[in-house]
Length: 347
Ligand code: 5AD
Ligand code: SF4
Image 1 (tube, protein in one colour):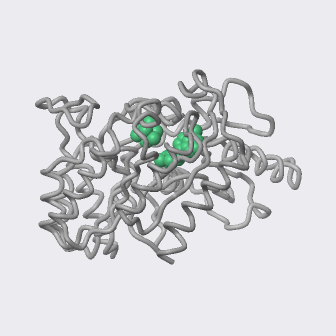
Image 2 (cartoon, helix red, strand yellow):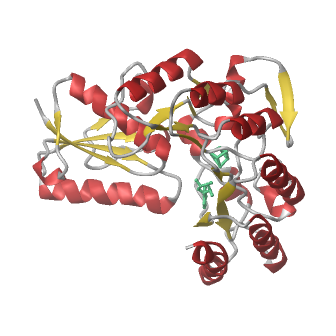
């Protein structure tokens, strides 16, 4: 029996993974501690979305090892597949792929049950490291997902969050009929069907993250409209409101297409609200381009916008092709403008 401390960096997908990582170690008879100072082993579930996130991982490893040189450090998460060199202080690399979905997650009782429906991403937005860190999109079988939802409900959970890098394309890798939406060519998604099956259950709230503007089909909108227990706060990242920037980001849609989609959703789901992700200061974002982003914010009226200053990630296309030309001070200025416009207003 070992005392284990688990630290999770990054997104909901990592949090969900960590709940299975916990189950993995619990099966071996290990117990968990809240404070790393008391631990024999520290498991670090890492995030690499930005360099600052990666640096926080190294920082924590150093801090823990300095305090207790004998502690065993196990690294898992997004840093494992992309790191080439040995990381000082790390004793074992645990690829997250080795943590089976058959393990029943040890869930955090305080919040909604997180249920991973797919992992990986095939979209290759030019700035994003995720497809390299998590590989191509693989969907879990629908019956397995529903079984997990039922188990969570039996344990008393009343809210479920369905998680994937791009939930709307769930099941496209099963290889059914073809369909194309918003420039990103792909095969038919089974997400509307999955969402409907989950929403039919007596859950108070069903949410999903993240969906992207492409693949947000009419069928999906219908399902959302039909089931009031589906969360009315939709997270729909648009990243930039400028067509040229969107093209260089390889997002596959235009400002107008995004706004049309939002209008369509608003029409069918009258009480819908939106949140979003925006990247500020992507190469080529001049004042006119930035104003297009401001314009989208004004038109949609987001409840929350997660504002990310662009930072080039080694290995991605945008880091290779474009110079990070917008000065930090200007990125900060734009960040403040959007923060005032969206986040302060809705506080
Ligand atoms: N620079 C800044 N923000 C980024 N994101 C992803 N990659 C980068 C990057 N290189 C942001 C996007 C995405 C969110 C999870 O992180 O806005 O939606
Ligand atoms: Fe990254 Fe784009 Fe995939 Fe999201 S959809 S994980 S931004 S490549």
